[in-house]
Length: 248
Image 1 (tube, helix red, strand yellow):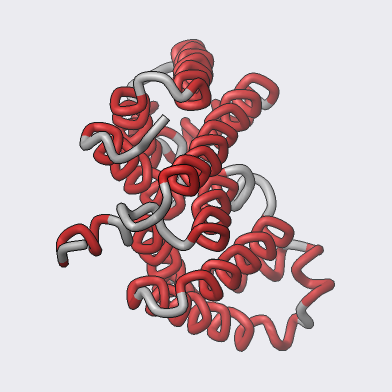
Image 2 (cartoon, rainbow, N blue to C red):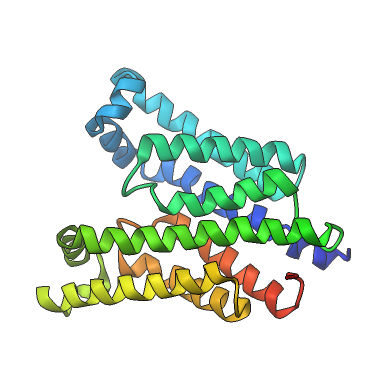
């Protein structure tokens, strides 16, 4: 592979690296908010004594920065992907909904694909490349479907989040926000169905990339740094489909 191709096929690792880098920096920049969250979350207090929470947050930030650096470096790809998968599972268990679940499932899919197959580059057999893409495709679809289901089940919660946090809802009344949430759930379900089907990949992944990029402004409590990684990954899959690298 050429130098450029090597960078292109390292994008899955880079997307994870960007997310871990962002969260690692945020542990220091937003230290007080993390302390408040751990102090207010019973499951976290059971695991970590209150007097050690501060040190734990700093250690967690350093660990995330180290993982980010290793993901960017490209060294020992599969062992690092396994470590990243373990970290994401731990985060899902501790942070749960809405901070981690379901959006970290998308990142976990990327990490698992890397752990199993290492790359989706041209030197990788076509069947492995397709299996990698399928794992990531299922993970992205799962995130969108679970978001949609949650918006239908917990509509009042989402109305409150939009009213408090989202710039999208500033000019809308409650009924309009309710309609927006239902429309959002329909859009997410449609994109998920298109991705899951495996059809028209260059279009489905492009639409998903745009949606994940906009997600930060749509519902901030559900969409943190993870959405940046999911947007990058969707854009990358759209590029590969357009370049006819993904084989079916």
